[in-house]
Image (cartoon, rainbow, N blue to C red; front, side, top):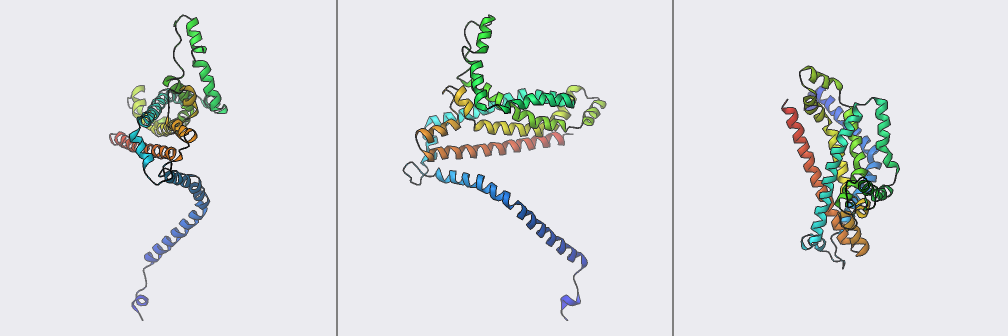
Length: 303
């Protein structure tokens, strides 16, 4: 008789082994269920990004080199376009926050029926093409457009304002198009805030401003962060509105990629632009997530 038969395993060890085996089988079943989705993600996201990175490593002659990336440091136009892209993205994101947060807060405080009606007007622009909305803004903001004509007729100004074919026109058009992408997740986050928390703060002596600043605003940060990330990322890849509203004076990264591939047929340089934009965007999103996590930790640890 060997030692294992003389001293059987305790029941607790047998139960632990059985639980680990069940957990492994459960993981395999979940992996089998997720395998079609994982394959789809791999096919439409991982493979194109990998192909983009591989294509960026070849110059116009088809030689393996880093010339496409060295061009960023050799040509000032690349750096200027890069700075313009992120400048517009930050300005538009900030404008959406300034306009969208009060709007979402107002919607969250309305009765359900009234809020549903108002949300229709927030979602209504999605039913119209981005191209149509951009041309509409051109009609409104051009030198002989509606705004300048009204202001001149009212005697407010004597010369038309330069509202289109510049940075101002790009910011106005992009803010109008991207504003719903911030309002909707922010409104959803605000609606989940328990009103008892606000009433408890007011019962403890906090005024409306202090209640909003110390309770409501921190609880709405997840929705605000989601909206900011969505708007910022969409700004970086926007093409139609900057191309039309900028009048060729505001060149963003997506426009530069289009020019590089369509006009100069340099797919390697265009792919390098996409890779650089992707890497910088991921780095900024990681930094934003870290700052937001540190901010949330600091807010709640101080209570």
